[in-house]
Amino acid sequence: MIICKICGHEFSDFKFCPNCGTEVASKRVEIISDEVVLKKSKAKNTGFPGEGKGIAALVMGILSLINSLSGFGIVFAVIGIVLGSLGVKESVAFGFENDMGKIGKILSIIGLIISVICLAIITVCLIINFNYFSAMF
Ligand SMILES: [Zn+2]
Image (cartoon, rainbow, N blue to C red; front, side, top):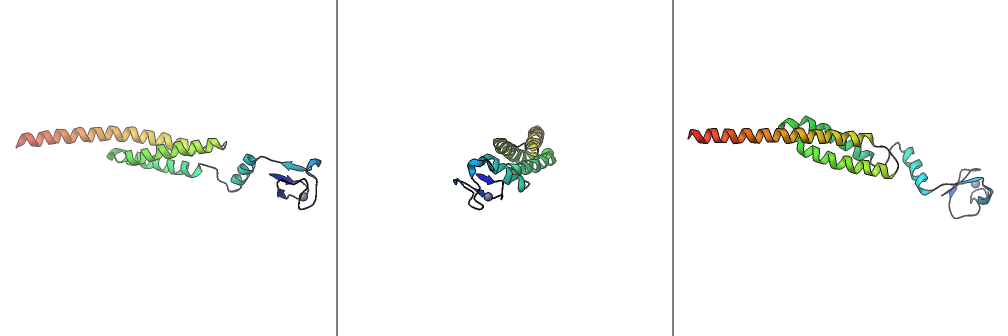
């Protein structure tokens, strides 16, 4: 993409600015790559690629921690890890940092570990109770 420095008009594939006639070869126009155009447009929208997934991963990470003691946190944790990984990958591909995605992924991993430990304890308790009651009859 080409931006005319005289009038600000954006165009491509012309030797002269279609708006004011400034010659491209005169260097009074700025030639920018598609990547820069994408970054500029994303910056205008105050968002970046993978941001949504990063926020979702953060929410899932918190939910996994809240629900970890019941063992249900495992569901949120798995979603959080997947979304966090995808979000960070997407952001890095476009040259952005995705801290929310990283933190969401870490929280989800912690939630997953606690959930698995609690599930193991719950399972062991159920087996002990089952053996206890079955021994009574
Ligand atoms: Zn122009």
